[in-house]
Length: 505
Ligand code: ADP
Image 1 (cartoon, rainbow, N blue to C red):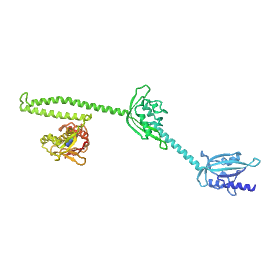
Image 2: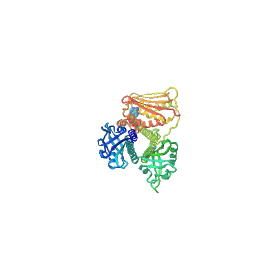
Image 3: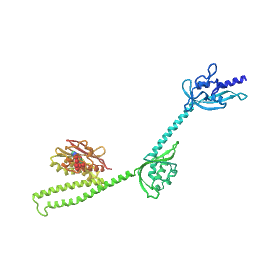
Image 4: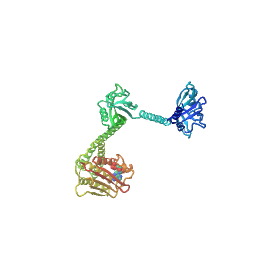
């Protein structure tokens, strides 16, 4: 019995769990092993070899202080039955706190009398903290999930999650229902959920994205939907993306479709385009209506001038000449409006042919020269000696030049107007420059002069006349011919317009 007790003592001393033994009925601790002291970080036994758990400081999981009689060791003695395991937050000897699990059991003698109790202590702090951490993480994930859910639910964009090669609707947000109308969607493959979309190309796109793993971006795509049973199909326009969803191995397992219904914007823009087209059509018709009688007027003036119906007095001849000038000016203005509206409606297409630019420049310059001379301006035309031939549209280029030249003459009271043609060696194109020493353009006005109907100053415009269309026609024509127009100007010193023409291949 003595050796057996010694062996038992050795087992207790080296057990990998904390063991404490208290004697009955006093409850005094009579034995505690090294592990207990490791866990609790203070000695369990006082000299002379006794201890008491009423010195222990611990807390229940709900934060209540553990009373001496609540320890499993004390309870096992008092209740004469096994207790626990229970978890306590233990205040350790070094001041730190840690979770400890304690179970208690009574020890009986051969007559069944409770003679002592035994408690087993385990340090569960790491497990407990890991569990807490896990719970914390799970809660954070849940919060995150709810937030995403909210975004999904409240998004003005429509979203749908489709699973598998059949594109089964797994998740759909309210905006999606708003687009397609309220119907049975969840759990159904797309061709069942949206049967009227069959044949509109969308299912093929879904298949393609699913197979290739490449996302698809659609813009203003028209889709005809039957938003209510029995209702006629309605066309909506959508900007959307089909994006593949992949599993951990990178395999495509489904798709996310999301986008916005842009029907209203598309309709508004179409209406605007229509209005704009109607406006241009009206301008064109009006110009025709004006041009016809004006041409008749000019014809009759010619007849008068030819004195077929009788001789004119000097005063009458003079008046006929003035009428002619006025009528011609009016005709020019109408032509400008006509060209502008033709460009606006896209009715102006370039007709390319090889053009001798030197010749074209000299001809255009000659037309404006009398006006410049009349104002007492020097007039210079610089053309390279070698012929410079470019494929372009002669009539349109001539109009560009005439508009720039007439502006130069119009806005210059002294000094000179210079027209220069140069070959640009870099891209085998050509560069045309129209420079003047006129009133110039304020820097803040420069960016706006190419806008239609825009004039630097209403009073200036009234003094010199003009529609405000010249430069916008110039820029549109230049762009149409693949060219680029630039301007440099300094108020009071003059302006320089430059048209860069590239070779049309
Ligand atoms: P407009 O029929 O009035 O000449 P444009 O579109 O040709 O219309 O020109 C717009 C405005 O740009 C003009 O009203 C004028 O204020 C300014 N502008 C154009 N060319 C010149 C220039 N060579 N010198 C000074 N101002 C100019």
